[in-house]
Amino acid sequence: MTDASTPLLSPLHDRHLALGAKLGDFGGWSMPLEYAGGGVVAEHTAVRERVGVFDVSHLGKASVTGPGAAAFLDSVLTNSLDRIGPGKAQYTLLCDEAGGVVDDLIAYLHGPDDVFLIPNASNTAEVVRILAAAAPEGVTVTNLHHEHGVLAVQGPRSAALLDALGLPSDLEYMAFLPATLDGTDLLVCRTGYTGEHGYELVVPWAAAGAVWDAILAAGAGDDIRACGLGARDTLRTEMGYPLHGQDLSLAISPVQARAGWAVGWKKPAFHGRDALVAEKEAGPARRSVGLVSLERGIPRPHMAVSTVDGAPLGEITSGTFSPTLKVGIALALLDTSAGLADGDEVLVDVRGRASRFAVATPPFVDRSTR
Image 1: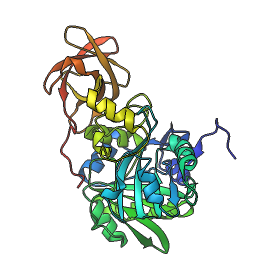
Image 2: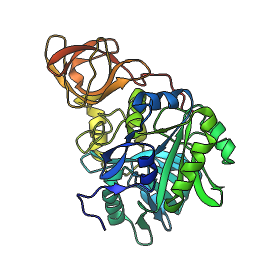
Image 3: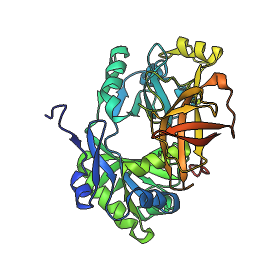
Image 4: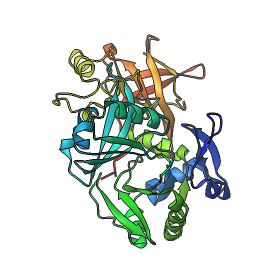
């Protein structure tokens, strides 16, 4: 048993060390930021141009099973599970009654009585607690955080890599299938967080190392790279994908974060429905917008944003250097009363210097996901 001060370790920890990984804390887990021999930009470029593999085993895993499990979840989570059928996954949100986001997660629908969930690492216990407390008799919510590893194979050559492994690659976006690799049962999901064509493999914890090794061996001819969570962040920011704790939180609602597309507005019930409907109808006081640097400034979370006249607008929620565009990009939560539109200029306080940025609607790069 580990205490709160001891970081949790991925099933691939030894392999990360062998590859010279620089480690960092992610939701209480010690995970690779980047690897020796290239770093974030090289890893980012590999995913945009070829193929990369990420260890995202820190992500949570949970099951909701029993008679009516899917219907129960549909009454709690924001999105409408009846929009998809068995074998499909869905991005959704768990909100509190004030409309704040407890977590964003992916729901994998096996059937009406069986749903698998992947929440964020640091929120898994709370998601499981809330769902278990609300579950009707006969529906069981089980925390499987340490039962499975998750490996993300992402990039334009990812389908060819899965073909080489004998795994199914011809899947629709957000579909999943059970498969077997060298005697190991796993789940192949056409999901990811990079904006590129890709897959996430849910594997047994004890088999994660063997699957990782097989992926790297199969991708050697395409110059595959092991990629850390630093590149995962630059890739997702280029797509405008939100990160919980920064772009979504208990203080930042789906309406403010432009995630209303993941809300089933016509559903009669889900946690936070009344608050979210009221905010949508009234219009949010602040909303997430994209920003692109017009100078050399690299934006970071919590940097202040103002009008060109110096009036406060809000702050950066996610910001980074875009390896694809070679400029700084950001998501920022800004006052809607300013009436900002694409192309409008704002100022970002970059370490005490006012740096010019233009408003732009994400994604900042072309989409290749589907």
